[in-house]
Length: 171
Image (cartoon, rainbow, N blue to C red):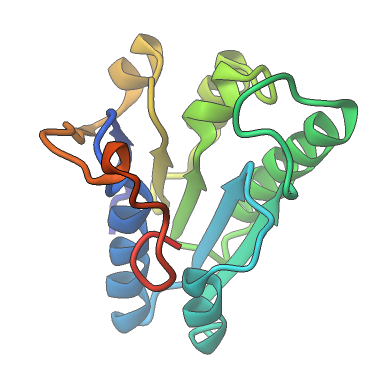
């Protein structure tokens, strides 16, 4: 099977959820998935679900409970670099047919990763691997390198009305 490059970006909700849906579908088809979450290190319902599918989906988180806005520290940068290296190794290992770089676009915005890092990874992608990159504000060169780009557009959201992330829905 030929693998393509997918990018899920935009200000709307659902980028990680779309990548998780793809991972679930791939697991159901017997494919191996490496799911790298940048800037995430907290326990979430999605991590609990993926643990139940660990025969097919490997989840790694590269981050902690640190900044969401603000300036990353040296530990944040080290974690992201480690994640990029592990994702590259997984992509090139021959073991995985799907590799997800969740929030990699945001990691670029915060200088945890560089556009050059991601474009370099794209350039190394074997034909049989589907590479999925998520996060707001995807760089134009990454969009250009992709085969499929979905822009999640926020039309209406309940967050401004005071609704925070709910377990099982947003986290």
